[in-house]
Length: 237
Image (cartoon, rainbow, N blue to C red; front, side, top):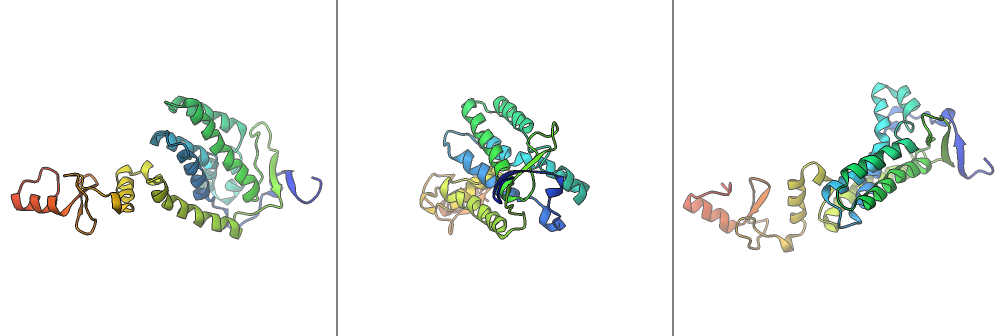
């Protein structure tokens, strides 16, 4: 490489000898980028947002080698999932699972996937083997920012804050992939001015309401009516 700065070839010897606690990937940063890309397009469904978010995370599937020990992680991380062939697999899966807006979903999933590889080249201090398994030649940006650098720690915390803050931005968070009803409930709670009862449809306050069966909200009037009449067809009591 000419000069001290820029994109350069690297090899296995350039992989940093980090302590075990510093070798763990910052998955939340990649997830935050994928989550943001998936929400930029309001037309995307929850499944399409999931595809984009997973595309941003998929390269670190090779990080499962950490389960076999630090040596295996050092040998295989930034290989199996960090190459053009893995990118092709993501393209095919996105095309098969996208449904509507297929070409746009393919484009955004590729952007999410390659944002991960670009971030690793600049912010991990580890070479990325773009042509694995055809070639073990790695590439990285120098000077390298290691995984345990304060900038990466700050980005990790900022990513968590951003994803939690998306309840205010898009009225949803990545929690929708795991527990959509809870995610919707919290989203409603952080926008109290538009809060309505799921039983009668009237405006309500969380202070006088209650979360009932099915992660629904019931106002004080509906709760009182159910208790007084003994007719509870909505799972209030």
